[in-house]
Image (cartoon, rainbow, N blue to C red; front, side):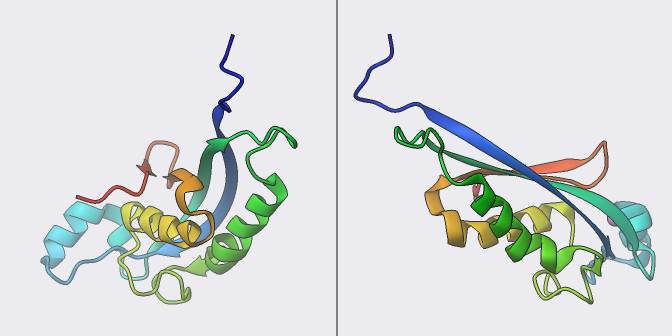
Length: 144
Ligand code: NI
C-alpha cells in the first residue's frame, strides 16, 4: 500500500497547436553556412510550420479535487500568453514574444518556458515543441 501521509506526484500535459512563419539566420555565419545549417528556414522571406506545443506540469494530486491544477486555467494561460501571440504570425517580424530571438525550435521552447514559468513556477516540468513530425525539442529549464 502507498503511504497515506504522502501524495502521488503526477505530470499533467496539455497540448496546443499553432501555425507560424519564421526565418532562421545568424549574422555571425556566412550566407553559405546559414543555408547549410538552416536549410529552407533560411530563405529570404522564411517559411511556415504547424507547431505542436506540449506543456507538462508536475505536482501532487490535491486530495480534495483529485487534480494538480485546473486544466481549463492551464489551457487559458497557454493560449493567452503564447498561442494568441504566435498563431498566424511571422515570428521574426510580427510577434512581440519572439521578435528579439532567432526563432529556432530550441530558442522558442526556452522563450515559452520562461513565459509559463512566470505563472507556474516550480510546477512547470517539461515543454515539448514539435516543429515537424520528425523534429522537436524538449526543455525542463536546465542551463549549462
Ligand atoms: Ni523552418
